[in-house]
Image (cartoon, rainbow, N blue to C red; front, side, top):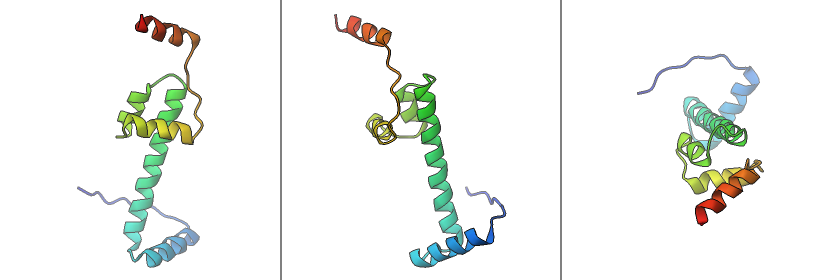
Amino acid sequence: MSIPVTTNVDEDLVQIIDRIAKEEGLDRATVIRKFLHRAVSEWLIEKSLKDYEDGKLTLWQAAKRNNLSLWEIINEVKKRSIHVPYTLEDLKEDLKGLE
């Protein structure tokens, strides 16, 4: 179910959106919905990866939060050069698991 959302934007931005709509053969509302969806998805990935980098989330949790597979979120980590919070203690625990 869609819910109408109203906002004001600069005239320059409306002109750009209208130009894109014309080039894509879409109406203004469809272009805005597509851009909004893309921006929200991008923000959520960035936030999830920041939380991962800060040790607040695992990669699995970040993937689930974004409806991505583990491999897709790993690709996002690589693409964005995210620091992997893996400590010496983590390595020791992983090695114990192999014994």
